[in-house]
Image (cartoon, rainbow, N blue to C red; front, side, top):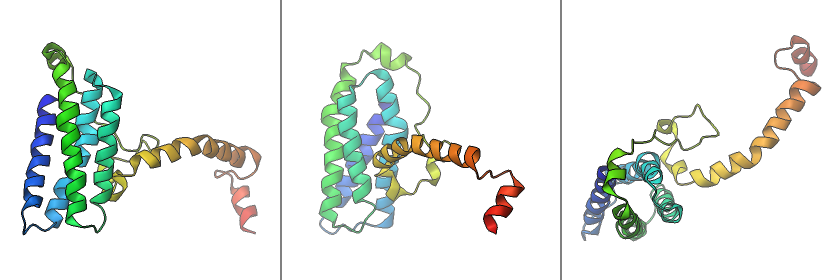
Length: 179
């Protein structure tokens, strides 16, 4: 877990160094690296940090900034906007997250098994992360709030449809609705 955080920091620094060059352009390959960085944080590094006891507030701040980076990197924006978002992510990972990890006893870090990778949309259990388009990754928090809020409404609607009238397994319901 600590090694994954170090690798994430190295990658953020490498991308920053690349984009800070005066002749740098944001290529598709660079955008892919940024998207992979955000994906790694959300699905692998962050869940491990939560398990070992990094404070929720620190993780929430890093989540907010990586989501913003995913949003910024999924649109046609200026290089400085991507640089700014990436620098903010690197700063919070280096100055806050790494500091909190340093406070955790090495024995806890060594003995804590890595958690299962997180999924972006737990409300849609059969949607693997690989099928979530990069532009949606930055909006996963907002989408999850929406899905949780509407979940009870959807269940009530499905119950009404199956109990009160339309039943997908009934031929009579299908033929009467089509006439």
